[in-house]
Image 1 (tube, rainbow, N blue to C red):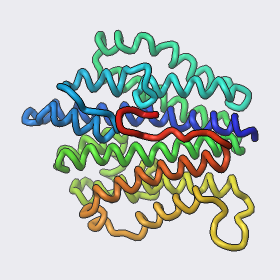
Image 2 (tube, rainbow, N blue to C red; image 1 turned 45 degrees about the vertical axis):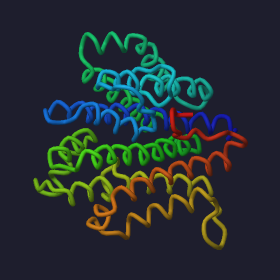
Image 3 (tube, rainbow, N blue to C red; image 1 turned 120 degrees about the vertical axis):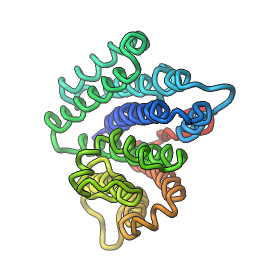
Length: 311
């Protein structure tokens, strides 16, 4: 496969997942402020922007945060910007993705100019729900209409790497909020994990079980461990001849170390060291991104979270 097409597919996966997860993170932030009248709104906004790698200068309100993380057309780190970037990447891979996938991204993109009006008329939660639904449609079309070949491997790899990074950021917003039980409930709901969690732990809600589920569960697809395992499987399939010793690529080594670091640590140990674990996962995603770019995309400069903006 041409490196240009592989790169476009990889970034379609990343940008669509980024749009969905940023919408989830914003939803958690807004619900937390509404549910707890004692929350310091400006402090919560600054904390969220710090987690997302944006500067927190001046006074901030939730409305301004929604503008920065939700509606900023110039930033690929915002919901609208990520969907715009996904559609632009799809233009470079039209011959590889299905017509249904292209129509989904294109119709979503055509609806974006009305995003601010949608927020004003229907409310921000309705807009964020619409974004999650459009991203879910894209994920379903990918699974239903795309051949199980190298192209799909690159798209799923990008989606999985972004999912690890954004789930770690989502957990960091929770960790900075103090880790209360209501906060865990909101977090699980935002990940679409609430019902599955209740069935798994039979209604028991505590810090240990919630952290264990979102970090370590093998069967829930949005857990960090499941996303790492999926990314590792994609990299393995892209390198069918691993050789006689070790693994073939730097990306496989980085992903493998991160997965085993989670797999062989207990939930209590992870909770006690949660901030360090989450920071390590974010570094892992950045390193994997660079390794994948070097290996498969030639001289492409990897997109990374930096102070001030996503560049």
